[in-house]
Length: 265
Image (cartoon, rainbow, N blue to C red; front, side, top):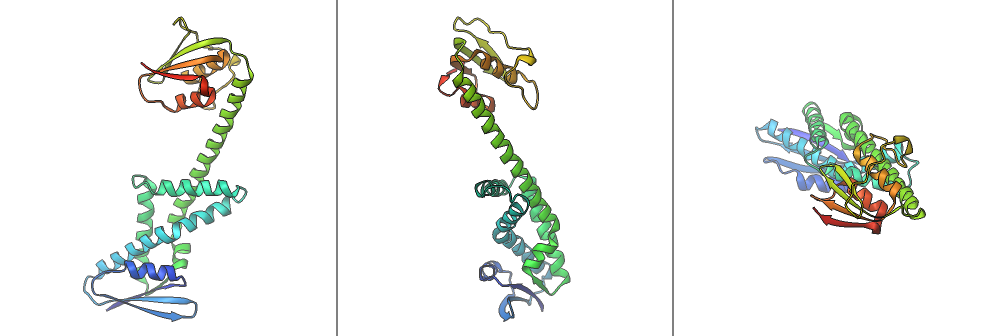
């Protein structure tokens, strides 16, 4: 017979383990000792590797379902304590949504790290203080959570800067007089053509020193198209699309708002 003890002081964890430990020929007893509830598993079968594998998978499931959100929140509050409560919550939500994506590398790798560490520990020990195991034996897993938090924070900062940028340009558009009544904006495969109301081609403002807006990333045709529109400030922009709108079209719509109309090519 092989016995293994999991120590915890959380009734929620006790109930979770009792509901998820179901390997054949395994009997469970619970003993209270000092501050811990001791969940003792007695395995009487011959498939010891199967028993270890099942128990390791239960610890993986428990860690992700009962500890992961708490761990992420702790990392956020520790490393980004200067963020507001709403910003911290936004970062946490981004992390949780990302970790729900089973196609992401981190989704699979974090499970592997927990499983390997749990299996190694179970094989070489007779008992486990669950919180201690998670805090001190899962360093690679915690590094993954750190990385995901940092990535989510970067996304939040970019989103915030993008909104500030959009608001700045909206204010500019609404504060200046229009220089042209109508512009037809043809957009296909990330390439742009601007035509006036008589369908004559409008040249792009190619002198970068005169641009109202310069991209932080590159001087792409989209950048020049946007700056040309900001110089013209049309009363109406009819966007002709050959496919669904992308991020650039959404940006234009956010900046020019009710000046935008759509037409299919």
